[in-house]
Length: 278
Length: 295
View 1 (tube, helix red, strand yellow):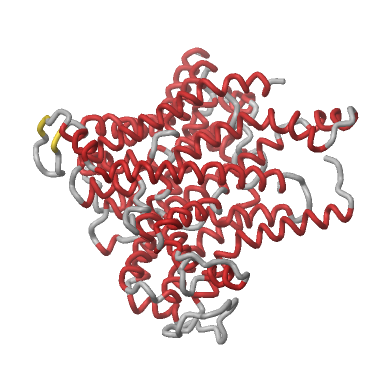
View 2 (cartoon, one colour):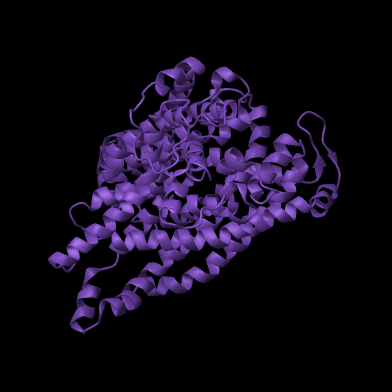
């Protein structure tokens, strides 16, 4: 790529900084608002940071609702969902990559077909299916999609990752008498760490932030997850914004931290490099 | 012996594929079939279903709300998808080059995409609050008119459009991958031929990025059709005067609030039909670009 002249580079940084600031601004407002003293009348003019900053909204959350219990539920669901997704999705991608070309094409085509099924279409029939399997009102109904790797996209990502590994690597291990699981563990897993981390992060964002599934399939309050707790906070009092934003900050914190760690892999150029490969 | 080993190994691969295959069968294929069944019966979640023929379809056709919701969803699609795709494309073009600091900018752009949906909805409810929300502070500060946003039927849908334009991380990342896949030699050759940056863009970047862009656009249409739900439920529930009643919210309300799963299933079949048409288009449009891709 040709190099920018000095002043062009300055312009590029300027434009990129302004756009980045625009995308970070909502999150900044969330943080700033969570530090407002409760009960204070809403600001009448632009207020970037409340003065003095009040941290009292955070402990107040714990008094108002069993926040710890909800955080525990969210953690169980997120970790269960991520672990199962990584296992089943990387197994499927690994297996597909070693099929004959004809079958690879069929499975990749079918997976892309499954990708376009609207989620909305699954809410109601899944209720019927979960009831049949006695999964309703339990962690099972929240984690169930992880059995199929959560999303066909994740299977495709692992498939592309496996296709980037030369087949001879698999063959060599196999000729030494290794089973498919051993080849997966000894060759595929170490060579697809970036994809594992990237898919793990995407799956964590899905399970941690999932609002619709618990809304549809949970009844018992002691099983509620954090996004449902946040909605309850809003239903309790429509105008206590500092408290709601404090809850929002706590819920946003884990995925943002994970993203900060994983972004090097998630925003890598070759993660989606197989996207157009048929 | 060698052959037998091969067979055992492939059986093991089949077992590793099984969770995905069976899971997709039970959690995606079976639900689609069930939806078609539900559309023709009276099932309320506890009774034995009876065949009711086209009664559910007639209900949908007679209810004016269904048309309103479909219209609202199409209005949202019409504005949201082009704006989202343009935003993703411009951001990708800006942030493709390998330059110190580009990692930070890319991460910043992706950040709103990793926020939990419920948080994102509440946050925007605060941002567009007409009296003390920060968006109107800024508009007033600039001397611009400060609309009532969600309280006004004329601007309410635009809040959802604005929200969606900040969550374009996935398309953005895929487009960067697409741009990086274009061989640099093509640009070098164009420069030698005396092409301007503008000509290079239209003659190299545009045709080679087109398949990625089209595929993402189709995905975005399908995604945007349903993406409004969480924000819709938390922020407006369809108010004011059904101005923000989008299709997924109505499907949810029919099935889970009004206990009319059959009616909800009919609407889902409409949604399938739209999706099917779009997917068919995808299949007919894409191969033509593939030839360009193999340049």
